[in-house]
Image: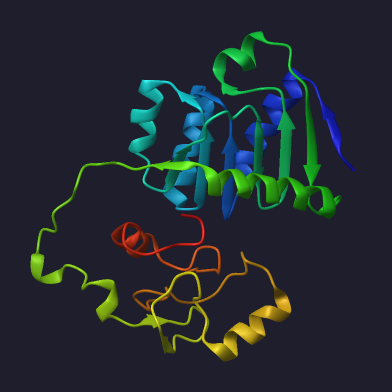
Length: 233
């Protein structure tokens, strides 16, 4: 059952939602200028390397520079965005409040809090719409190119290396959108959970807490995100 939130409730549950995220975090807000406390929480989640997406319309320049320093966070710009929605893999908030410190401290806001376990259908509708906004948004990429310290150890072009099944490590075609071999995909289909934790990185084959939603390890994703298509890219 959904829960009504006032201004203080939105701020409290938003902080708890960010802190409680373990696999995925999506923050959708037209305006972006976060409080120090939320910054600290996002920096902590960045260190944990969970999948974080932030969708906004009009960022603060200083905020953009700060976000660029957090390598696990992907930011996107969505024109005409007016929705404010925050969710992780277990809960969601739909609210009038932007992810903006001034709004938290000065405005009169309202919101609705939803738990996946208590209202799976409503949570699924919120998640589906959030993912639609992710797909239609233009990702903001850091333009500074990094040159490998040892060119001999640079990754080979994607077309010359095989991929690996994220469940059994069998060599398969390199395609992060299809990270299972046929047998393991049939097994996964019975679960049909995009965030279900698997054992290996699809690209390098090393042990990794992968999933259909996030099939590559942190290093392989960063090295290949401009040449391969990923589920959340």
